[in-house]
Length: 634
Image (tube, rainbow, N blue to C red; front, side):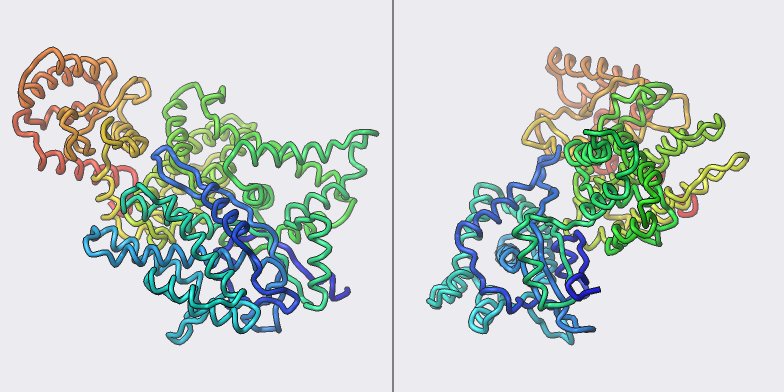
């Protein structure tokens, strides 16, 4: 094999690139100095900002964003240094974006009158971002990215990367008139002004969240990293790729291998069924789901070939090499066609989770209750981690659809319902942790837990005559509980949930609806989905106070009774205690378990701030004990 052919290509994020085993990235001698000007810098930061989406709670979240191809090679065996052959403009500019956001967050954290929680969050985030700018060894910081020439490198290290007050930083930048250095200083100031403009007119708390979202969008940007073993051939490879417009992702390599090895399968002159099938699968995932195609492919591969799944979903595993190992030659053409058929079926099944109300078999029995859990997951699971929940459930759904034996098929259906509920609960507590602590530190364990969950479901099989479903869920519950560093923060965040039609306090409505409905689910004959209900404020919300919008003042009530309560308020000009006394008479006709429990304990003339707070805390504790703790922990 020639030295030129010794390369590998894989998709990865900026996050994994800058925090991987290669600690220092130096610009290749084939490259020119940093050359991006105002237009390219503006385009990149605006692309990153515009890639953000807003969820149902009106919060910014990162989405899939492709940054392009980066060509790298190791300087020498065993070295932690890597040379950037192509892609330095984007990598350096992304680093400057990290620096800008770190600087802005650090300035926020040093404000005199800042709220204590906002101070803690902004400070933690600025420290978190620093790990994508510097590496630490023996207590010393060293830059991760090293520009080409000594002069620009010195300026980049001292005037861009190092933190300084905004006024002092601007002055030191303007003092240097070297053309190379001006590109850095102008880029920093231009991109900072764009971010500041985006933050204009919002309060400090929302500004922190927006800065975090921009940082995460840049951090999670995808690249195609091509690793070469020989620098002398690097420029040739780079020229070929750029001149031909190739994007050598693992999926492209797999696709081409599929096309070649199935060329003798079902041949019809003038038609390319394999190509059409692949494109149909690809377009279905890209345009109908929020899941990147490489993630979809990786999960599906492990569902079809669970023997290849190790203890975790190692993203460094080369899926193209796995494909070639499993299907080494054209003789496997029919097997590859079967594999492609399964991929297509998975893409169709996945869409059932995206549009659950259109699935015929999910309209009978108690499925409508379960579908509400899917609706909740779709409305809230927007980030790159929990948006994969459909892929976690896919193995069970597939087994249910494919099973022929009626008893086992019923068991798969029952388990799938339980797992959808389990996953929805898991997404709920994941989001509660995220609301309480918006840095990634508290959530790190959950990344591993989700891999554990998928691993278990991929390898789980129902055996006739055995009842192993209960032990599976209990094992998953125990492992989930162990992944939670502090259950108290979840209880606290649940008790702080709020909903009001006024003052923009409707952003948490999905979480409020979820817990109010969930607490009414028990082993009795009551079916929450048979009740067409809505959120009722026990104390009237016209006062628009923190207490009236708090979870402890909310209850899920039949819509017809809720309407009567509203009419009662309009019809009678009476004091709040008397009004509540009248409302209790309406509550007495409710069949909702939580309403029945409420009226057994409610004193209409003594339901105030402390009672509302206490009820919210009780509801949070009840949810945790009822649905989150395993039997072993209770």
